[in-house]
Length: 80
Image 1 (tube, rainbow, N blue to C red):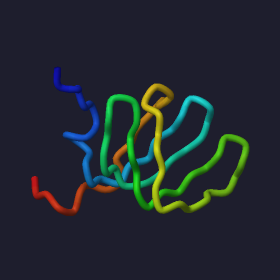
Image 2 (cartoon, rainbow, N blue to C red):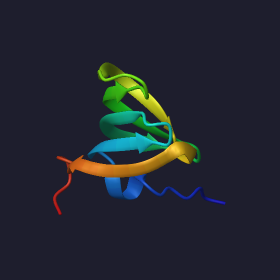
Image 3 (spheres, one colour):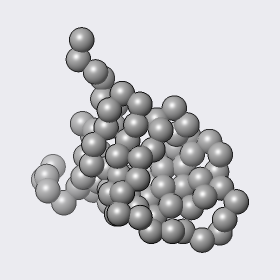
Image 4 (cartoon, rainbow, N blue to C red):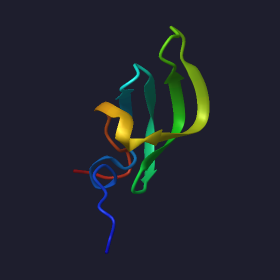
């Protein structure tokens, strides 16, 4: 059975902002996805009880706890 990807087909290469259930925020470029996680690169991460963003080269986001996903910038590689 082929796994169902709900984000990768639409948002690969796009810069996205992901708000989590606990109030944390991840901003980065969506690179890959598997059944439970999204993999982002060039990330800015805000932890729930902090006002500052920290920068990381990559991050893994658990899909179960995603509350909202917003596309900030479309993919540069694909037209249309």
